[in-house]
Image (tube, rainbow, N blue to C red; front, side):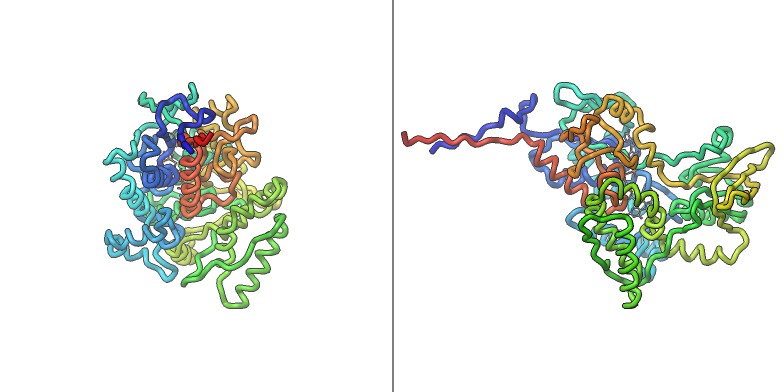
Length: 485
Ligand SMILES: Cc1cc2nc3c(=O)[nH]c(=O)nc-3n(C[C@H](O)[C@H](O)[C@H](O)COP(=O)(O)OP(=O)(O)OC[C@H]3O[C@@H](n4cnc5c(N)ncnc54)[C@H](O)[C@@H]3O)c2cc1C
């Protein structure tokens, strides 16, 4: 028997090489961990890993590029599990680099809640050596065009760099927060209305009355940021629902509960949560253990749900889920405890009705739950802390808009991100998954549900790398020729 190994003509590409060129758009945590894992796994089958990211370092992105020392991770370091195959890498790095002795406030009874910027530095320490050795090419540009020509992708950066690739991964992450429609453009232009991320470089007087719009973790970060700058003035926090992120459980605990529902509905999931919380409370365990179990099993649970039930979850349970899932770090909890006794912090429940600035003060009308309840407020500054604008992921980027217009991409049916299949392959408007165009990170929320935190993204990065290696490296076929007759 003679065995001949040759490329499969059905699968062969126009390039005369068995090596794959991969380009990643976005070098926040998602893009960076994919590049890192790919560089470790690919050996000889990938001959290019290029990553477009205008920021100086890879891995920090929106969440971890802040210089503000008051901003902390909202999960303990040992739960970050950032590196596939090495879940304790971040904790070990914190110890090895002596960060814990510099930042003693990070150590709490619930674990180490490190500074966000330290996580950014950790990611940089993983990626930088690979950039220096040329394993990863960091193109410090904003990608402005993505074109398909003769089975290849042509990527063009805003400074003119052109990269050709066989596979592209879109990891552009979070869209900027949306400025509420009620806020006149003049206030944005004059910086009287700013995004939460702009606090550090803004000129806010210590005595100003600041209205923070939004009451999630970004809002509490804004509060911490202002107080760390010795802001003495009134801070009002506006919440649509009146719900605030819950606190972490002290001590160590393991996730508890089984969400293996066959055909889950929103109602059934809620019922199961209540039942399990009752069970753990009776046993003296924290309710947080149930929410962590729900988080861990969140993806398969979400993917088993019918679209109508997913929509019901978003309509009725989303805010409730978010405040229990995205919990505040103990340092913020301590700050709130202190502030609760002071008249300089107030919480308001309602919606922005109108915002005007007839003279020097900003006049805000807030509509409460009852139709007659309209509260009037005079403030000096508005800080928008409503979190990333998930509805706007395709519109705020020219190249994504172009891909959507041509039908190469489409938003997912729930409007949470970009449509992709369970292997993260982008689904075109015609419904076809595209092996050479992948979507990663929070942009895949519509398909996976729970895909915001580092551990979930790390696990997804592993799957994406496996898919790239499995499906794009040119396969061979073996032809067997009998030599006996
Ligand atoms: C404020 C905040 C705090 C968080 N804290 C935690 C935490 O404590 N623990 C946890 O597990 N998770 C946390 N998360 C969640 C989490 O880690 C994020 O979901 C994660 O950062 C997602 O990374 P990303 O790379 O997908 O997106 P992003 O961080 O948004 O990064 C996207 C990157 O893409 C780049 N980019 C965008 N468009 C282009 C383009 N056209 N060309 C080139 N580059 C482009 C941007 O410059 C950016 O750097 C936090 C998230 C936020 C927003």
